[in-house]
Length: 251
Image 1 (cartoon, rainbow, N blue to C red):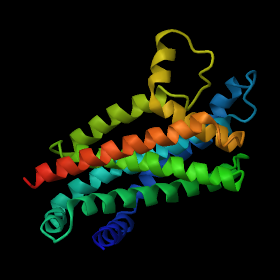
Image 2 (image 1 turned 90 degrees about the vertical axis):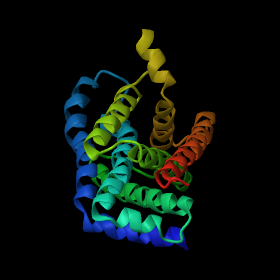
Image 3 (image 1 turned 30 degrees about the vertical axis):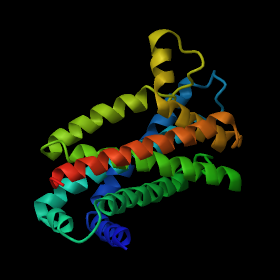
Image 4 (image 1 turned 135 degrees about the horizontal axis):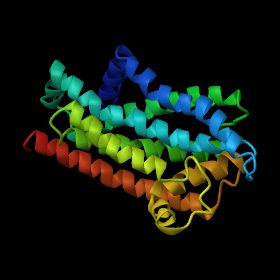
């Protein structure tokens, strides 16, 4: 019951501060509309037929990053309002507090992915080509957003203010996004860049989303490993957030 109460409270907070929804979805949509149009012209000689559809899975992951990073920002705002500490003294498990806030970020992520999916229809991008692919995409988005939201929650309890938090999260998110397969095909990469990109776990998440959405190969081995990897990362991220919250309350 505690999880539902926290989730409902955070949803009300989100819509009361609706600018957080607009800000986090604005950048991916601009990438979708502007970057895909401009950069797509340079890809005309490649094997990529629809560059917008090609980068769409990467933009889904970018939405997960940007939306769930706001999970940490919520803590700073709630601290300034005093509601953060009122929740801590309530008879609710610490894990329920984290789950309620993390699941709110997950719900917001699905909302924003849905909005971008509607925009993508104008660029011949199909979010769910089939029922099987829909299940895989939902699963990948869920675990990605759960992982990022849990990390963001824990990091926000370590750093002293929101300015440092934003700087640190940008330093984490941007390299992960750009050093992946989000914006370009990686098969022809060489040298150290190829190694770094292939060491990035979200390269495989994006590849899994792309193969599911574009080619409808929803049961490849890579997709299975991506889901398992995200599940393990989400578990460790949640334990990290739980540990930081316990330190915050000296329990």
